[in-house]
Length: 356
Image (cartoon, rainbow, N blue to C red; front, side, top):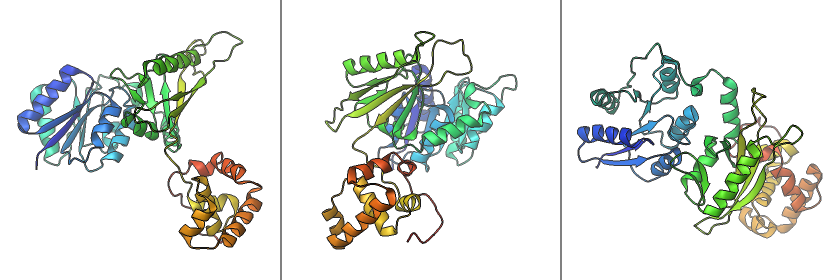
């Protein structure tokens, strides 16, 4: 079986240096490369048995430790070596706590890189000696609120991207990463800038972001915007909502961060039946019916799928209306989609109660 390595870095010289080390280990290996975090996710989406991933911690869109975790969740069986210019013990510890197989410094010589890669390929963890005089970067700050915030954003059913006034990506949640990996209308360019497939749409997006980021006066609030982004695949367009984020601690700053929410109409998120039952006091059958209505199923279709009569389905629907305080199906679906149930994209554990 042919050996396949992945190298992800946005610096051409370093990229070639790492590839040279890998060729010294396995001359006939296939080496795939990526220059941004979305590129890396796209490469890892291929049906290939990868032997090793070497990724730059701070390449465009990587979002530090959250990026590492997302890469690991995508291909947990593949060992990862992180390469970084940060040489502090805190940086090393924080990264290794994520479960990576090794940590290399960008200042490493070719021989040092060779040793690190060989160690990991032998099934061991490579831990370098830290530079005790160097402080770690902000991405390793002891701010648990940042971790909590990222975890919360990763639960949202839409893509969330945090950018600065120049549309430089500072953070993306898991859904945004998956959307960018498709390269179907929106992506992150080689320099880490959020862009679209069409020049005109990109210009419009960047204008919205700049307007949302810059404070235009003491009595004026920063404004966002909304737009539709077309897709080369001809699938239904993305809808983007640009929202200014609250100013940070530095109140003298006239620039802020901006959140861009990406909705993919092709993706349906079904709230788990146990969550629906818990929130609205539904029986299991009523919750299954509500789940079907949310993804657009007709009553007749649902009745055929579960093998019950239309009279039974209508009876269940009447009870769902009563328990949710609604009268029509559109009102019912809107209620759920604006509730906490819609945030549960995977089953959530609840106590086994009798929902009758």
